Image (cartoon, rainbow, N blue to C red; front, side):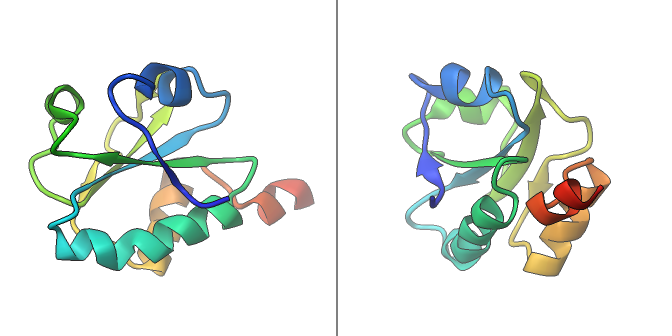
Length: 118
């Protein structure tokens, strides 16, 4: 399953009430770096299946979410766990796959294969 879009209407149900941590990718259609990291977000959705949900929030039509999570630049990714923003998780700018893996590990998210091995 590839990442799917959420907005202000379904953010609470899809993100805040999720039973697994949620990586939220704030993006815009006019943002080059956002397009650059899109395949990495899709990869993360597959690689961390069951341990992480990946959603995309288009910044322009969702100004209240942009304001609530203090998104000042795009792309910005952040992690929501148990309905709360994980402190220190917001990351602005393009991120490579190795950087994303380190970022997720730092915030306590293991790959599906790592979790089943433990």
